[in-house]
Length: 305
Image (cartoon, rainbow, N blue to C red; front, side, top):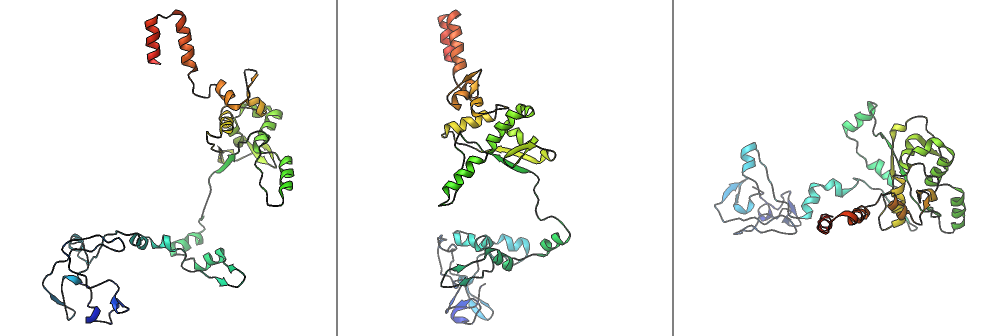
């Protein structure tokens, strides 16, 4: 039972601004209805009254509960159904709440907010967390280094610059080699690398000062990944496909060459390397069958294909 409060006990802890914060006593209701703002409005039928803490109370003061839980655990357990976002925020309040403390200095010029200092000031270190570093255990660790291999078309390097410094950024880009261009240069000068795919290079070489150099140790702690591209970006997408299947490429022209034929696009080169799905095999099959198969057989082949 909740209370007594309201007019029977204005000094109760639950009283605020002259009324109960928990909204007791509740109203009598013939059925349970959902309330979008707070908790459900439960069914409460008129019943006999009883004296609790010296005050007469009825069903309007009964706190919602599940009869199974008090019987099983032999304890007072109250519970209500969560039907609102406010209830979810209450359960997971520390996710929505943020830091327990925030220090800000307000001035006429600007707002001064030091995120690092606020984190240190407001951070709470529990006993297990404190013992972990005291015992010399590592707080964090990294098992492998992920190396991202860029893919760009000829004369389309990525250039980052600040406003007003575009010329300096372009000059620096001209003198700097990308990972892909350095891989081409490595294949031109190093015969050992010509048997490796672009994704295999980081396991055997290290990228230092815009050049690939032979790795001496820790090659097993690397994970190489080529950046993901959308098929709508067609030429870069098919260039990525070629890099995944063609070892020892010495240039963009080398990637576009198949059987001593240089194709105009990377898509055509990938197609003639049989890296793309097509109906060429079935067309070839029908062409051969046309010379020696009967008409019913051709109809059967066409239906199967």
